[in-house]
Image (cartoon, rainbow, N blue to C red; front, side):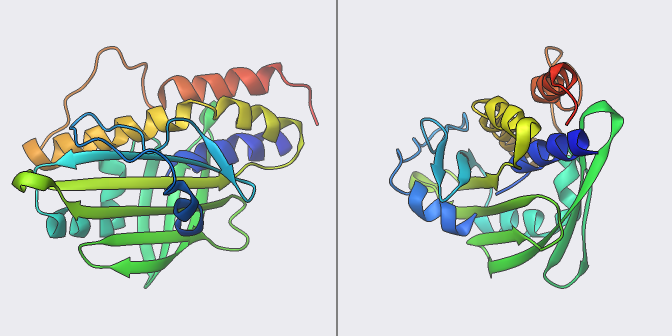
Length: 222
């Protein structure tokens, strides 16, 4: 049971995004204006025990349209590879079912803590969710009428214990890769109405899920 919780905590971390952590991340390098989803931070940093990573992408659509699409949480599985299902069972409360290693899944329950139409959506996991994570997505006009810069910041606190340490080690690179890929999928979906497949991808979850599974299988039981 402990192994499973460690794996799920790791997967949920990328799944999206954190108000308090992102304020500290403001000191990191500002994103370049590009369509290639650059990282907000050059490398993962830690703030108050939270690991933080950020990505951004420029999408050629109005920010109000992108905000409305994201705010309907049922749209998240359309571009986030590891989210199986998402919804808002009650106002301000969202639930996500996240694909995890070894054929398992986890439900994350979070509360919307800041909702500014056309500008920002921020949320934080609720007590009992099993995974401590925060997130935010921000929308701002791109210069030169190029559409909207969409920026996400992810913050999570890895669980204690050997498995948590293994997951944290794996998170030194892969969360930013997954976030970058998801934002590029969002860009394709909103600009063209479809998402092009990549024959080089190794299936849902990609390298990160495989790395987590390998790490867990090689770790002694706790």
